[in-house]
Image 1 (cartoon, rainbow, N blue to C red):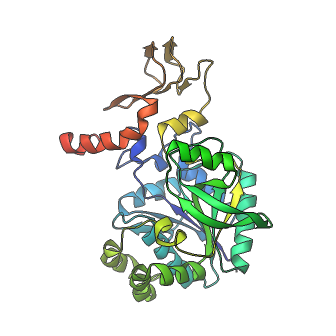
Image 2 (cartoon, one colour):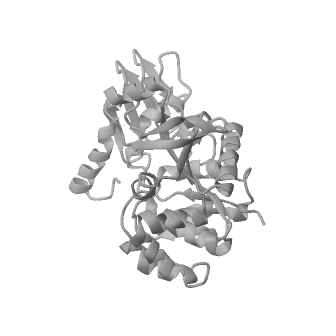
Amino acid sequence: MNNTYVAIMAGGIGSRFWPGSRVHRPKQFLDILGTGKSLIRLTFERFLQLCPKENIFILTNKMYREQVKEHLPELEYSQILCEPSRNNTAPCVAYTAFKLHGINPKANFVVAPSDHVILKENAFLETVRKGLDFTATHDALVTLGIRPTRPDTGYGYINFETEDADGIHEVIRFTEKPDIDHARQFVDSGEYLWNAGIFLWTAENIIRAFEQHEPEIHRMFDEIKSDLNTDKEQAIIDKTYPDTPKISIDYAIMEKAKNVYTIPSDFGWSDLGTWNSLHAEFEKDEHNNALNSDNIMTYDTSNCLIRAAKDKLVVVKDLDNYIIVDEKDVLLIYPKDKEQEIKAVTKEIGEQKGDVFL
């Protein structure tokens, strides 16, 4: 039996990518990179090189069930795990672990977001295989760490032991998004990595970790495990899941467990968390503008990201370091260095305009 499985998390809204990403059409279902394929499709195809399609599961919100099926028609509905509420990542990891353990007690699996960019796929798969080999033979929880290229305050950081066992290092501590001075210190030290949010472990070991460090979540799923992988699964999840503690897997497990390891990695990763990160990945003109259409004309404009319908003529003059995103019902023009405010702006829009524009 193939013991390798993949769980792709695809339930987020991507509010910092507004107005491209909307509640009913979040960024994982968009062709953000202009490749002709959505981000979730690219992620799925990447993992097909690791395990058969039958071993790939999607974690998503119930409202996205049909969109997942549309983008990934190869999957059975039983492989689309539908959360009735947004309770952060720890409950969805626990749900997956108990389900996979019921299918195969030796399940060894990857948890990965659906909307990240991986430019060096071969290097990525090689790193994942190394991690899975390690978790298959050790009581270990592994997280992939990205070698930082700049002091970025938008990522969490992993402090790791410099000594290693075949490229796998013990984790000393996690630090959530630091200020710029600490970020510079972390990068200069060479002892910190960006936290990519990609995890590897066996179902048995992560279930044990929940029992030790987040017993309430463990209890709730342990009580319903006999109904998972049956025709009662969705009904019992709909009843139980909304009451699970709302906590991330980082806070619930990774920051508490003593058996956490990381693999310093370099495979062309970006979490595509913001428009700024998309600007960094996109091909740019001689003035460092990332334009998605030949019908965008710029004059004395630099360092901008400009996206519009490809049949719309857009003319921009005398702007530097701006985001311009033109959707049918929303036009966003915002300073690129203030893009972290966009999430708060969407909240205010919801309060003043309702959800029609969200």
